[in-house]
Length: 442
Image 1 (cartoon, one colour):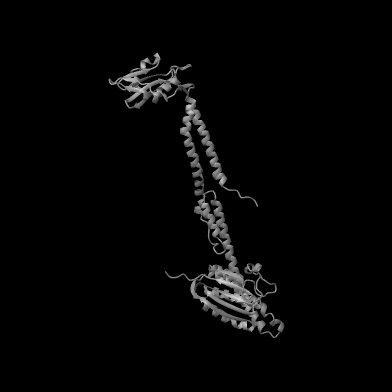
Image 2 (cartoon, one colour):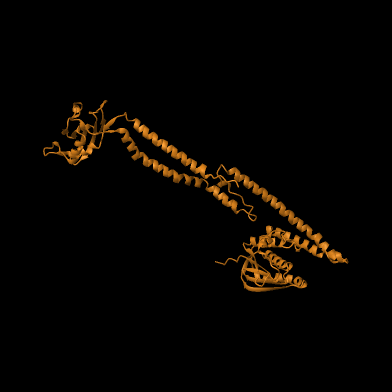
């Protein structure tokens, strides 16, 4: 069997793979662009600013001074060339270390700056400096300082990881969750159409699939399927009418033939009466199938009364053939359905029991169902499903049209009931029919 292709791969897996590839490439491009903004070479590490700010104190006269804090001492030990200039907004300033002459003109004007990264052109970059405004307990300070140098490429990469990587992870998770959801939502109409198709059977074939639910890509397929259903309905209707007309037209010549055979003085001619009866039964059963298509009555009726009346009609024929039939009512409840169709079911089951060797037949009403029990040879378990097939005979020599039990199953299925074939307690066959009870008022 050829393995069916799934739309999951082209609609979910492939788009996700493309999204991840785009995200990875975009992530690499962002880092490359950020690194490109750097002209190359080291810059003063900005982490010296908080350390310097923590070492600045204000004297009673308002002047600024530098206090050698443990952090500043550690910083100076790590960077012997450390220098800085600090200025408040009033223009008061203090310096530490050997401040290059290049920045002498900035002293007194530092408060005009808020951010700067400075670096000379050639190593060892003694003029490299960073300028930042910093809020402290003694007010806002502007700090210009030189300390340990760091490579900006590494800084950019680390910053990119901190900023871009969470965005990348968020987009990846969003793709994993949102893409399957979008695909499932997009295919929801297809799933509904599939459920509609599953509901179509021999009894509901006149339905059609909802073309409004179909995506544009499969709408032609749904339209073609609906057109095929319509053609099947038309063909079925023609076939049904033909069978009905044929069965109806056969009744008259069969009745004439039966009359001639029964009144014939020739014994061999009269022996054809059984075959003519089979033809008559077949014609009636074909008409029963047509009636079920055209007349779907639903009414409340007394099942026990219907069974008694049907068995009473059959009793003379049963007695004439040396068989007995009895009715037992174990329980009786109102039943909703087509009384004429159920009457035909009872008749077919009783006749079938008699035809297959049953001498004593019991029809037992069991509430919203009934049982037909006989004392015949029984039906093997492997044959119990097949006996409901049209024109199937358990024994090749058996009389009958082969449509009776098929008609029984069809009628009970239309009544939302079921038929079970079981072993009778004393040997033989027990056919159990379950119907639908009348809905209780309120």
